[in-house]
Image (cartoon, rainbow, N blue to C red):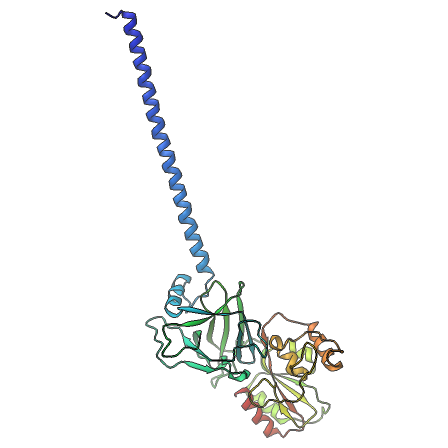
Length: 369
């Protein structure tokens, strides 16, 4: 038989055991709560990271039809199945030039077709007539941006009725946003179209956005007239005819013409000739081509070459040894005033001895007035 003292010791021992069990139970519950909370934080951080990544990616998408990035992405999914990577983009006058390397007169897209589709919000169809360009080595076979009406456009490579499911859209691979803006010539009612080319690696496709505007910016001109002729007294009536309907700026120096924002230039020289770059399909010349040095193959006419901008390697700063004094001095002058733009001005050279009627007729034909 246990003594009273032994019973007390046994009861004390059982009490300690029960206390330990309670403490152990509390610790288990606390640990479980801590593990659950840690799991919650992990899941929450993953969800936030995914959400932030989606928002970041959507924020880097070029939007369509003034939609949100998310809604624009849904539109891209309807219009783009595969991509044709474009490394470089430039404009020359009203023409869009693209390349899988660097845009030069001999490297822009010159094979196959380019088809523009206007993005619509509901039920897009690829069987409706669209703008199709049969590309070749001439600049004037490229996409005419001034022909586009209001809307957002995607460009497809070699698309036809047998390859509609491919939907291979031009995709710009540059990490930074590419964006250039042009303004069309005025329409009959005086309004214009504002054309903006936009591309970025994170966005599914190169986009051409076209909107109607009442006027172009104050410092934007339809035509720059650069007079290199020596006969200052002769009145050229075609200039007055052009100025009636278009925004015209007359300048006397190559650098001044280069700095102006415009799509077209008319260069007046002492001759009875009319011509454009020899890379143009019509009204071009095979005379006056640089035959040596880093500018070999380009036009020797300084206005055509240097005002052509990025396409014609304007501002290269070529030496006299690799060209001549006139070409070198013009190239260096533009180099000292170079602008970071991929826009180039399309130049038509008209001699001051050309008949006014013939001159204006050539202007209408070359620039598509």
